[in-house]
Image (cartoon, rainbow, N blue to C red; front, side, top):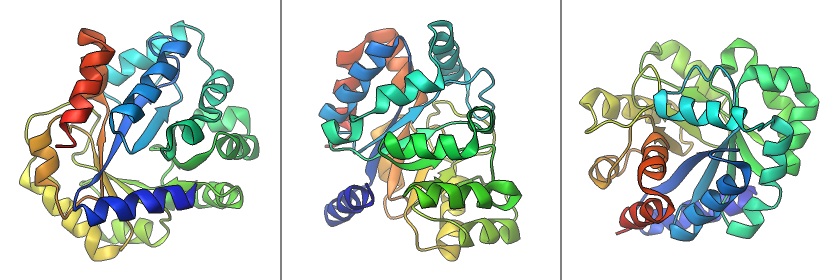
Length: 258
C-alpha cells in the first residue's frame, strides 16, 4: 500500500498537480450504494479514497457528513460491515485507501483488533481526529505501524507553533491539515490564514500535506498549488450526491482534473 501511495504522489508531482482524495461514508446512503459510489469516484479520477466508519457523534464533521453518518447508522452500518465493504477496494480501484474513524469505535473494538482490521482492509493510513499524537496517540500509532498502517496526524490552524512542531515530529505517512478550525463543510474561497497555516507546516516537516475542510471547487484547488500535495473533498461531494446523483458526482470529479 505504501508503494501505491508513493507512486501516485510521484506521478502527480511530475504533472504539477495535487492528488485528489474523496470522502465517502460506509453505509451511506446504503452499504451497496456506498460501494458503488466509491468505485465511481475512482473511475472518475479520484486518486485516494477516504472511507469514514459512521459514528453517532462525529465531532469534527459538519452537517452534510453528520447527516450521512446518521443515515448509515439508521441503515444498520457497523464497523464490521464497514471493514467488509473495504475488503479488496484498494486493489480493485488502484487507489490508496484511508480510513477515517473516532476513538470510541477503536476503543470498543479493541485497539489491536482495530489495527489488524485496518491492515486487512488494505488501508494506507487512518485518520482519527480525536486522538492527537501528543495526547495518547503515539502508542496506537505504534500498533498500527506494526500492521503497516500510518496513523495520520490531523492538525489545525489554532495549534500553537510549539505543539504543531511536536506533533509533526511524530508524524508518518502524510499530514492532514484542516484549513480552518471547527468542523467540515463546503465553503467558497480560501482565507489567506489557511494558506499561511500550510506554510507553517512546511517549516516543520517535509512529509506530504493534505488540505481539507471546505474545498469545493477547482479555483480553491488551484490556489493550493505548491502548498498541498493532496486536496480533500467530502461535504461538497455528499451534497452533490444527495441532490443530483452519481452522474453529477462523477462529472464534478472529472472537472477537477482539467
